[in-house]
Length: 154
Length: 424
Ligand SMILES: Cc1cc2nc3c(=O)[nH]c(=O)nc-3n(C[C@H](O)[C@H](O)[C@H](O)COP(=O)(O)O)c2cc1C
Ligand code: SF4
Ligand code: FES
Image 1: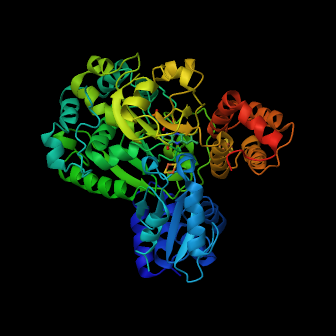
Image 2: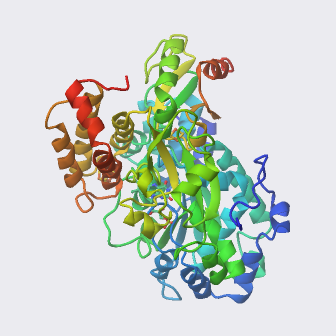
């Protein structure tokens, strides 16, 4: 069931569009912000409020890469694997992160602190190689700058 | 050299507040348009300026707007959408404009909306641009307070709502009709054209979609006139262009320069040439979906028509540099992994073809290359050509592959012959 807070936030979004369904992406993001990820129950909750079928909402939920249909760690690392980053050292950055976190791309560290995901170009190619942790972008990644960035998150 | 789009952007990167933007001449173009120009006059100024869309395809902006039904009989609400999805790998120009001068984009969007008599405007922003989101939200609130948005803008009879829509990932959301589906809360798969969005777009109503940089040019055209805008450029296409360079150059970055500046000038004078000890082998000139250009063609002027003569496209004008210590096959593999992962899966050649291409390229990199692989790649280039797929993603994916096969065929053959990647 949606909490009061979730319901209030989603209803505010529906007023910004001509039709309720248009708020589905935002609604899923709201659920994700409150619960960490979007479970089957989350999909059903959104569907009910927006007058959509669960299949319709799941269609949307599984399309957008930043809606997580599986649990993630406390922080999400989006590591850019696109071309500018590839050219200047994406593979080294990836391998360093793999070693530090003990997981491969798609995995969550054993302590539940980080989930490591690949992402398309972050639009910070002049700072390549680049990654995001939660809302912050880090560029010019090397072993030291990666370690310094990771240390900021509990 | 005039740099209208970036002249207000400060070195410390802090955006202009409404007061600062007004002091720098901001919202004068909107005042002028509402006071002394009909919507059609704004359209005409933009048409006469030879402004071509900066989202990658270069469609003439005024012409695009001219297809929207106008007047009392036209269906309403009409919509304007700012395409701020910016997910083309190698591209980071729109971010600079949104972070540095958000009011310029907002004024451009209001003028575009006025020109087609739109009622609602959306800015479709990619989720990862958190700083842009914050700054745009603040600037939109300021613009409402200043009566540049909302009911009877600046005391005129014109009304406009502007809303910020923040996406949730996927490159396909940037494709014009995929974007419209996405705003409607659906998967970002493309729509059949015709009908074009100008007559049937968001919720079936007339809609114009333009890129951030395109809209950012409009206040300057209205203020200074089409002739001034044309003269900013070295070529027929009007205006300046935000060019960018990434890869192993000395100073990666972006610069506003006259449209038609040569690749050589940008690479050498602005990007500072290659890092010490490296040689430049080729450049993808305008984001991931453009063909490689090699140094013998670096004197070509970077505009929409001239780049085609060099066998490539201007695209987004943000170059990605290949150096002689980087494997061209690996670079193309990285590109195709991107396209394959981002394919929306709607049509077969793209959904099935791109993973196959990735598989072949991965095989070459892992030492599993076989005779016949290059012919298979060529076959895909033919099958995924324009006209065979619903949208331009798949043909775009083939451009860097075709360019690499043409210019770096020896590298591909060496991978097959030696059964390994020579760079590893
Ligand atoms: C797969 C794909 C992704 C695209 N992504 C973007 C984008 O992020 N931003 C953009 O402005 N145009 C993008 N485009 C181009 C748009 O479809 C459209 O042509 C453009 O927004 C029109 O604006 P313009 O005329 O001002 O260039 C993309 C096209 C395709 C095929
Ligand atoms: S070309 Fe690819 S991205 Fe475009 S509609 Fe077809 S499957 Fe989708
Ligand atoms: S390619 Fe990595 S930020 Fe653009």
